[in-house]
Image 1 (spheres, rainbow, N blue to C red):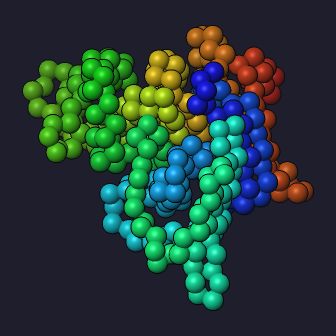
Image 2: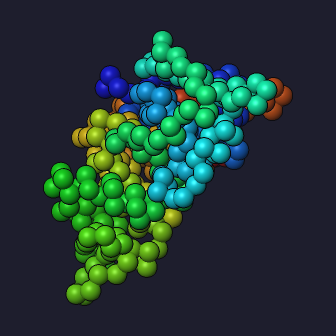
Length: 318
């Protein structure tokens, strides 16, 4: 396992997590569980931890996952947004991160801690600058907009992976021949036998989501990719191909992937591909809430354990 991969995490005082611990993560991790159990919040907590290299990257990470996700170019009042974030703390095998907002007699201070480094900054003196880490992306359930799809596609171009991308796209839809982003224009696709490119939005959300995931994997070399509702817009017959791509490219590019799903079909597909590729660094994580205590916990299954659950418990669902 790569040294930069998260193996364990403890989350305190963040959204639905008061005191949560989990361990045993691998290179590719699929997260399931019932609605509102905290799957997305869990990934947000992970994303903040790995993104926090200094105060500005910690601020950027909290801002991204809490309010803006991948849409940093949108016009928002970042300062006012950030004042609504009261507290966050997490510890992984990599680092310890903490943040809290102090408000005493109208004086607002942001208190940051990254491992042994601490800083208390008056809100009026804070720069509110965005400082994003290039090889960490959070692909939410709305998908990348055109701005960020352009950004991750640059990695495909730099690594001369266009032909591989075209191959994957053709396997998804054999009517689509090529994908291009020309100049400052919108992403476009070309149909077989046609000379004209058409905007990608004309082909439906599924294709754009599929291309976004592939491009993001190349952009996240030696980093992290978080995908919320990974199967959103993807027909169940395409899931095996998607998982093969994710497991293959993540291994090649040394990317740690965390993804969520509500779909049993997606979990079954993940397990089939785990076993087909004999990839032992992949795990399914089920999040569960104790109805008596409201405490959230997680159990992590390897491919053999997941196969047993799926074949012996017909009600099993993400």
